[in-house]
Image (cartoon, rainbow, N blue to C red; front, side, top):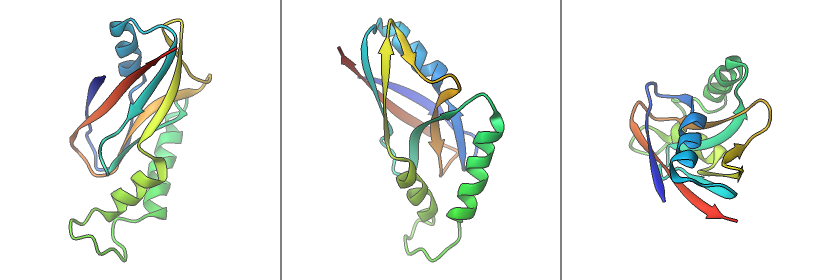
Length: 131
């Protein structure tokens, strides 16, 4: 298993980690199989979404703030309940296909690390599942 270290810069952001995932595939010589991407943080997530238009990521972040505001009827003492809820909405893992040493994504797709309680240094576990 590999670990990607991700440095986030804002409290809430989606970071394109596709290049880091491709680099891990290349450096490990993985060819055909699947790759499990797992976020071991309860206030972070991993997702796949459009990467061609940066306004999509902006729209996701802005509208998540409206759906789950930072201040609300929360009891969690740490003050980051919204981050836990947002993380649960996205989930902690993604499974991607690797074929011929390349991650198979749709034309417009990118892989994103979702930060909901940053900025922080985060980990993303990468587990190769060979064919």
